[in-house]
Length: 254
Image (cartoon, rainbow, N blue to C red; front, top):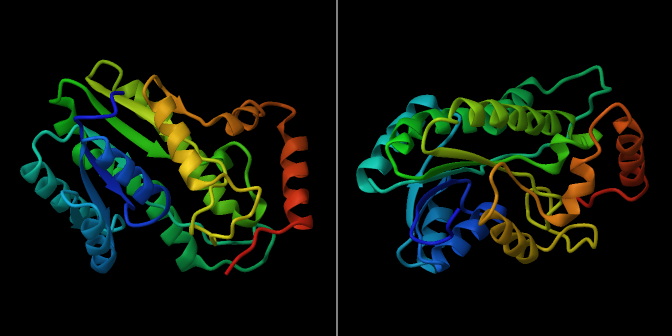
């Protein structure tokens, strides 16, 4: 994927990886449109990045997704890249006898149905472009689940699976499907802490963009590669080791 002269729509573009990606693409001469739920944050990002466009969007509202997509396409007919980045990461307990059903439904809506809806709303337009991309932001937890965020990890595994099918179904079109699977990056998704186990955001963005130029399927920073390769009959040992290590040294939360 070329890193300049694109028109790029990014969900969840007001903080964390989404904002950092938006600003990196903006600085490389792309027209960037960020979407988010809170207008005040959209305005803040726009002020810091003159020329960047914004649109208010709740990806849990299917009618709003379709309306916003039509609006963005009308305003930016050269749109050729859609980045499904928006996500939430609440903690849960897969071994408990109680379930916060509202939280669980909201998580699946945002992390899985959100990208599905956004992709569907834009895909016919993307097919009409000479070269276009759908980029789905999953997680290393798609391959190595974090037990205290069991449902989050499951939604990211589902998004990985969906990306595989989406890539196949679009194989004979101009649309390529790429999947970014970040490691633990030091953002405010959980709690920005400076923890040495988390990859600094600037390092993650720099390496991701480097790999994005030549990627054809997945965009994985180097520290993710051994974990990506862990899947298979013997994957359980590393998953247990990983989760036990986090019990011994918990992730800091606000």
